[in-house]
Length: 320
Image (cartoon, rainbow, N blue to C red):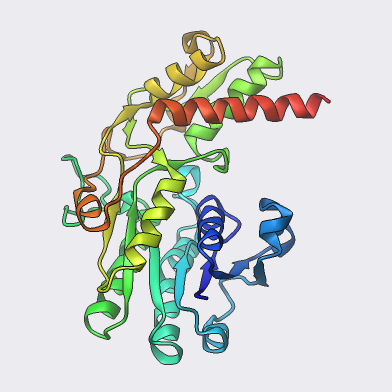
């Protein structure tokens, strides 16, 4: 039985990966700042199969890595993107950047056979005009979040090439699900629609409707991370759909699925737009498709409709 250590296990990606690995027979050690809330993310049956460890990024992982010597370590710990990527730049640098180096150093010194996967982000590409973005595309991060992720990716490469660790970065384009928080535009839209349907609010404030992103399904992307860790040799991979959709597309699909016209409810508010962000960005996952036999399985329209339906059902339950 393989053992996997997952930091940030209560988040969207960490929780989906834990469920996947458990289904494959793994023993899971899950780190979280709030283990009680982390347990509530999972069904009772799944929760009982996870060893939860209370942790915050000020605590060293050296002792835990030495004691458990996991076969695989997946790092999802970090300040999130979405609305928070410009908040607290010093803390973002510590957690999303320097902390990754601390993990790599602990692995090198205490458990060098442990495979490491860093959850990176398309934000490392930043304000670069040309798309699609592959593993070798130019990088020019424009936010503290993107810069910290870029630093982490650089250290992953150094520990792989100079120190010989199995260390990888999964460069994840936007990936969504019903486990997203409202800090992300997809969930903000779906949850607001549900509130509109039950008369709790009457409008949705967003930034530019013309901004375009490459949105995929979170479970597809964590499956990709698992696949890259099963390779004989470590490498970095981009996970994306390769298709760009606008926020207008998102709103039109989401509101239509609930029987609304988005134009009756959506209000553009420039203060909600991020500074210096590219209007269009999408990925090139041909390397992952060729070497990992990876493909995204859920189309954008189906993903958004599922999220809206989920949030409407949540609002119904609140009325019972």
